Amino acid sequence: MAALEEREQPDLFKLKLSKNVKRHISRVCDETDWTDAGQGWEGKEGQLALQGWDHKRRVVVLRRPLTREKVAQEESGQLMLSFIEANRKRGKEITGYEYAVLVTNTRYEILSLGQLYRDRADAENAFDELKNQWGWGGYTTHDLHRCQLAARAVALIYNGWSLFVRLANPEARREAITSRPWLMTSVGRKTEHAGQTTVTLTGLHAHFAPARAALTRVFALLQGWVAETAEQLPDPSVWHRVCDHLKQILAGAEGPPTHPLLGNYADEVG
Image (cartoon, rainbow, N blue to C red):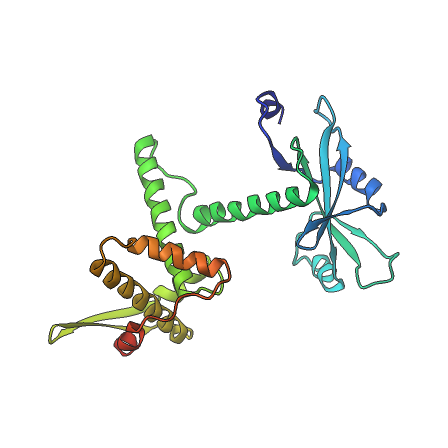
């Protein structure tokens, strides 16, 4: 943080809940003027100087209420919440709070800081997936250029697979740990007859029926976009069509109607 401050670089970090940080939480937990931080969180701003710091820094304590069931899960070891402060004065179902403490040198208000940290956490999830599920955790070679080539190849495959899976499952994002077994655990057989190619997939798990429907839907979308871009060259490429389609999905807008090729190809995937 000191190096960033010397460069006048804005920063935002989450503090470990050490004894001094918990002591600061205890001082503010009973105060009433908490500010909305979005998505069920509320925040309280203050100043804090920890051991090793040469001056006080701006900290924001974030908290969100816990239900009785969630606290029970924490007690049984199922959830690893950082810090829980009981709150039995309100006479409600709220039995405690989950706390997080941010330190920053920015001037953003609490609502913006809460969203900024959630965005950072969302970005971190992608890196966790790349390392733990796609082999980005390290390479045995000490040659920098080979490492860079392997890392870029993994990133390209990850991006392509993520887009493909989101087309197959537009309702929610699925990580590779579940999407790869769902869509790839099958045996394929390619046959050609009278100039027509048919790919028959035989599923190896109980959820193959929805996987087959998803693969058929993606195949129809891609075939339709390929045909449209081939007929009208000035139009955007298939890549742009995919991105525009996903933007509509992520924005909550109703996507384009199902391509007519869907019905034609539905019977060709068994």
